[in-house]
Image (cartoon, rainbow, N blue to C red; front, side):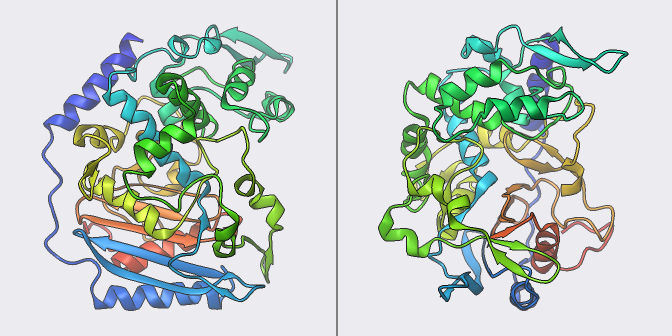
Length: 418
């Protein structure tokens, strides 16, 4: 714990001491960029990569681009539009992190605190290992899971198949919609970890634990506290877990892409969570939103915590969230597929410029995340630019993000900062 404390104190000190990112005087979204963006989004639809696509970009506080192509619901003939309600999946996570960090600002917890200080069920965790015969054995965790661990996916929670943890997690049915967040945390705490805390980045259920921690600290249901603290002050009135019946004609269908076609995923598989009120309100997924709603959230972040006169977080808290906290972690699995990035508090953080033209385009210092249906947003402090891309397609389409980023910034020129 001493080392963890020193790491966070050092990261805060370094961020506080370094100069503000140098601002760009050139406009990113010029007429050439607009033409690239229109052509790219239109091609996504024409090439049957997605049924519909919309994108919204702000630069220096002004809207500089919006357009939409194709259909939100191909079968109903409903066009993709500005008021389309999209399923954002893991783009829920940064909203959850922001909600939790509002309590950090109130002194409710420290990042280096043991998670068990607030959620005692996570005391005395065990880590699964394989013995010489290949049998699963349990060994005590080297140190407690910290709050920092659940903000950066280093708690050790895992579904490793070689340890049989995928089977155990499936049997526990952690995110069953009939469960509460308290039920989820209790069941999760009874499962062994796949790694020692703090040693490996593995994306997963940590943000749902953040949601449980939030409601314990706030002494209020997570969804209610999130709405009061983040959604309502930002006027994100179209964002939430539950979609009323009178808005459901604006909910986008989700499609599954094969090599030759797009097939609609049955609505009951992807919308049931939002068409009934369930005990489970996941921190890691589950929200639906319009593109303007999510842009308000992104604008709050690029403004270092304030939007339209409402302060959600202090500037130093946003900076802390947008600082890479992973240098001490041994392995970050597939995170490098996002580019030259580390991970902060519920965001990937770009640490270096692209090293190849095949990488995702972007600017050092940007922070971002995406969703399982291939949605994407990012905050670029250097250019004071925020971008939100809405598509609704499985499986995750990495090339969509690559092409969209190239349309925004232009083709990657190695060795040249944007």
